[in-house]
Amino acid sequence: MSMWDRRNLLAGAVALLGAEVAAPLARALAAEAAAPGFGSSHAVFTAEQRSLLAAIAERIIPTTDTPGAIAAGVPQFIEMMVADFYETADRNDFLNGMGAVEGYAQVHHAKAFTGLDANDQDAVLTLAMHSQIAGVGGFFNHCRQLVILGYYTSEIGCKQERVYVPVPGRYDGQYPYAQVRRVFSS
Image (tube, rainbow, N blue to C red):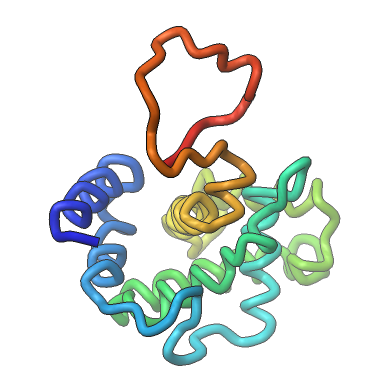
């Protein structure tokens, strides 16, 4: 990827996602990828935190007629971002927010978040989204941005959720969107 491409991607990321995701994304783009895929240099989440993150990601982008966040590798993407590209304070804020969501589920539902049914998970995440859980801070919005970024930069998000066009064709301002019912990506 050339520097110009990276600048455009970063500018678009700031516009779409906000500064809280853009700084770690900038560090990730500046790093040379050793191998394709989402592998962090070290584990930052426990097994329970990975399960929690997977459950949250799957509620944000669930499996429907296309694969969801788990199938797209979003939890691994988020762990890579948090482990390798987050500053210590940002990493701690993220972990504390996860802990607040899990703690709320334990106190108010007497179950782990992963043990709740989909409606209860959605109710907890709605409270987190509106910062109505003590200690959650901006975790949910931050996590949602990472889920969306991870999903739509994965092969599943790019080729199955969207219609992949490797080389854009001609401009057609009256393209019959109703025929494909998905957004194009390239």
